Each structure stands twice: as structure tokens, then as C-alpha cells.
Image 1 (cartoon, helix red, strand yellow):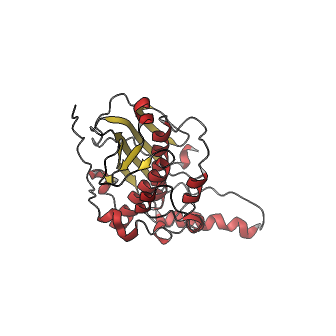
Image 2 (cartoon, one colour):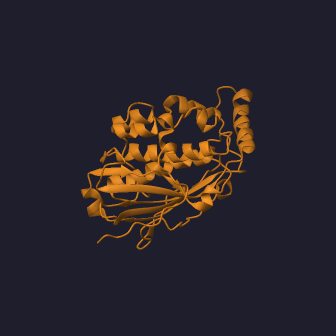
Image 3 (cartoon, one colour):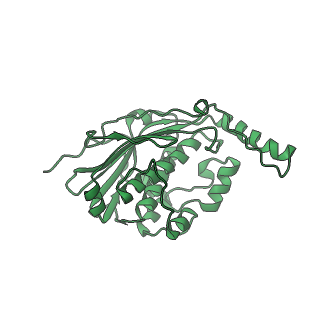
Length: 281
């Protein structure tokens, strides 16, 4: 199985206020380091999501501006939907108990040709043996990967939770998309969900069975209206159309139109990690 997985490093860009007391907390597919001030995180009621950014090294990878925007938006949208399970999400201009920000520190493109070949290969068994489910692993060539670091800071800029996260696509659970941003897009959504869950529960999302999503969260993931209206800033999830597109290997931008009016890409978003906030204590 290891031969069929892309590797992703636990990169540090320097964007976190602190890297102290981070402890390993790996999942089956994910490597991570986390730190949580449990009491303070559980006491928080409101959250503000700052635009995701690319660190300098990640921004140098061969992605178009449209692809970068879609990846960042997918991450923020997944985070917003996950945080909505417990928090009230406020607008960027409002203050909140927790200010959340993620920085993409490493990103490797998908080999679109290899992904296309994998998708074609997966269709052949259904033609040869109709009605017989024959799983076909994805070719372990040109698999994409993603690394992210993120934190939640209180009103004074003090870090209350942090996560360094890394995952690569694999031959068994990652759907091949005929696009260089296919894996990064899917992994961005996975990170947003993991980090959101960590802040909702104030515990690592790895190493245990997660609670089932609420009905509202499930509806939002299928393209319905999100629980928190501010999440509409990131556009609605592609829903069933997105699932169908993923199944047949379509590029992400064929089914996901991103933020309405490109609100995210036109906001004050930088592709360079910002310096750590000043501790005002």
C-alpha cells in the first residue's frame, strides 16, 4: 500500500504564532502534529475564517491562478461547514472568539495524463464483466499531495489551537481527476474538514471514530444551504453534480464554480505566508 501513496512533508513556513508543544497525531492516511488549549477552545462561541494563503515555496508550483483560488476556496468552505456544527461564523470585518487561518506549505500537482489513464482503466472491467464489481487501483504515478499548517487565535492574538497536516493521494481511495489540481482540490477539502472538527471537539480528529454529521451539515455537503449564512461566501458545495464529476474524473472547475463573483480571490488574499501575530499580553 505504501508504494501506492504519494508522500507529503510536514512543512513549516513560519506562519504560526508558535510551534511549541505540537505533538504527533497521525491518522491512517494523514500525518499531523497538533496542539489544543481544550478549555479555551470549548469556551469559544464565535469563529472568523481568514483567507487561506500559499507559502512562497508552495506558490511556485505550476498551478494557474484559477486553480489556486479553487483550492483555497475548497479548504475554507470545508472549514466553514465543519465549524458551523458548533460555532457562529462571523464576517471578516467582525471580531470573534477564535480567528482561524490556514497556510498551504507544500503542494504537488497531479499528473493529469496518468489520472486519465487510471480512469479509463477503471472502466474496462465493467465492460468486460458487466454487473461484477471489480475494483481497479489507481496507477501509482503522478499522485498529488498537500501540506498545510493552521491555527486558531483568540481576540488578543494568542494561539489556542494549531495543526500541521500532510497527506498524499493514494491508489486506493483517491479518485483520479484529469487535471493537475485534482488531488490538491480534494485534499484541501479533507484538511478543512479535519481542522474544523478539531476546533469543534477540541480534540484531535484522528485515532477515533468521528460522530456522524448533523442533518444540516449533510444537506450542505450535498449542495444545500449552509447552517451559517456567511459560509455562502465560499459558494455551495458541488453536491451530487460534484460527486458525479469526481466519479468520471472531471477537473474540479467543471463542477465547482468557487466563490460567487470570485469573492475569495478578489479579497485581500496574499500568496505569501504572513508573519506570526504579535502577542499583545
